[in-house]
Structure formats: structure tokens, C-alpha cells
Image 1 (cartoon, one colour):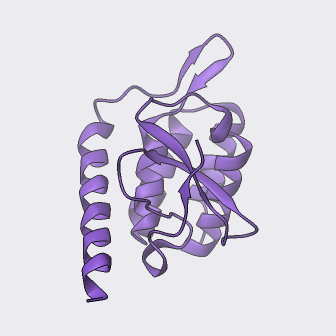
Image 2 (tube, rainbow, N blue to C red; image 1 turned 120 degrees about the vertical axis):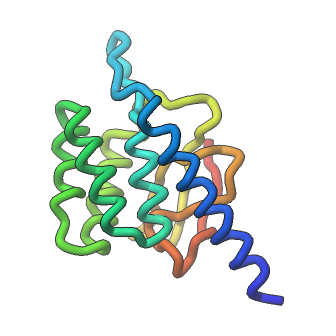
Length: 149
């Protein structure tokens, strides 16, 4: 019985990750509109890859995010991409998210999620209608968190 929710959560994460990969190429990169920046889809790809414990895909997404960004977003994305392991990458992703991304504009069908258990509480942005996909705990606690926005 305990395996069913875990299986459903894993399937949802895989489905979300596949959808993000398909739409990443057609999505716009970071766009400046006045003083508000629009978050690139490569951020969401990095979050999804981290939620699946996929270090290689997360690194690729963070490299793309650094390439298509500027300023603090570029610097923090590059720091995440340069991480030697997934734990360090997750710490960089937290800084990237909380110091830069949370203040950016993102599509209406995305929302800020929050995990109270990772490093005194951590936020990330993900698809609102999808199950929680925690990039900080990955497969060890995939659904730890809730939407706060």
C-alpha cells in the first residue's frame, strides 16, 4: 500500500520532467520587461532534474540558465552548474531561488512552493497543478512541501 503513493509521485515527476524538456526549446529565455525579469524555463528544468536526483540534467539546465541570463541570475546559475556534487548544487539552487528567482515574474500556471525542512526552509517555483516535486530532497522526500503563493 505504501508503494502506490510513491509510485504515483515518481510517475508525476517523470511526466513533469518530460513535459519541461519538450517545451524548453520553444520557451523564451529571460526577458526584460521594464525592471521585471521573466524567469526562463531552464530554471524549471533544473528544479525538475534536482527533484529526480539527476545531477547531469540539472547541471545542463543550470548551464543553459547561466548562458541565457545576466547579473545575479547568471552568477548564481553558474555557481550551481559548477557544483561538484548534487548536495552542493542544491545549496546553490536555494541561493539562486531565494535571492533572485522568487522576485522574478513567472507564468500564471506556476507558483512558489516551500519546504520547511531543508536548510531552515527553502522555496522554489514549479507548475501549480503538478504534485509537489521537491528539488532539495529529491527522491528521498519528493512531496515534502506545499504551495505558498
